[in-house]
Image 1 (cartoon, protein in one colour):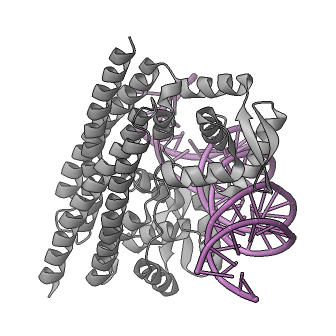
Image 2 (cartoon, chains in turn green, purple, red, brown; image 1 turned 180 degrees about the horizontal axis):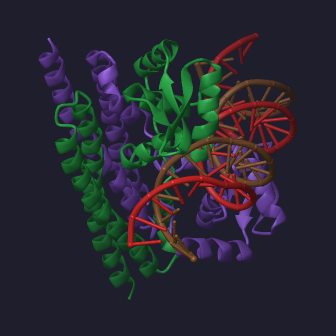
Length: 185
Length: 185
DNA sequence: TTTGGCATGTAATCCGTTACATGATTAG
DNA sequence: CTAATCATGTAACGGATTACATGCCAAA
């Protein structure tokens, strides 16, 4: 079982949409895939160099308003490698959820602690849900005729359904934790 | 922002439930927390040694049926460190979902590919849901009077709600992908 | 007798993050 | 003028996984 680097495919994928500089990839990912995939800039730049060496992408010096940058485009070889990756099965996510770990041992802490954690999480979820709705409205308008739009909405739907499920869980859990702390009195 | 090692707290937490050998921790985690937290044995053994050096746990040579092993128990100092960790906020999960990444770029592949990926995922979810139901029934009986049970059920409920949401998403997505591929013909 | 589970570890690698570093441009 | 954003990187660290290694016991 060899471990393969997946950052490369995320970057190749971005470049399959259109040409980007490293900085633009970072920005675009933050605005689009960051809910399920993120790269740090210190992974993007070295990877772009690596991909260029392997001739999967090629970079061109470019400049916008006197500010220089390097813009990359995907090569035929890069497209082929990317498509091959698209076809192979995905590795299952191996989550590490610290909040759940804490709750698992919740009996060892004061009950208000767990409650506080869950309430904080709930607040984050509400915010996140609003972001999703905003993004959904934005891209539905902006990319109305893009063949990519349906796929992007599929990933958004995943986020939205999971936020909904998580909110449900928070409500269940808060109720349950309150019941436990009442029973202890 | 210092990066803290969380394996240590997972292990301390296990030892806060009862005494364990390294191997037992591994086995118990596989059966209980593996849906949201897992450790590999090559992280458990060195960490137990480290924790012992720090006097957060202490190990005793033990033997079962002639087979020797080292069984660890948590110290007062260890309990204190663990409880402190329980109180601090959790780091948000930063997911990397390869399946979603592939679907995001789905327009660049044949539509059957994405469909296959989602259907595979759906099958895994059905299995997982059955496992959850089994575990739920088992522990509800076995730990009927344990004060830990409600907390364990809380983490299970998280899993169940998310499986349900994921199944919903699969169904939505399969429908959507079929619509797209029909439109292309 | 041989397979599988019990039991404990080391070594190597690699991925990802954090911190560090630099400098130009533009908007307020 | 100064803060924010654009823009591109390097270095170091540490955590997590994989492969490697060993050996006993029990059951089939």
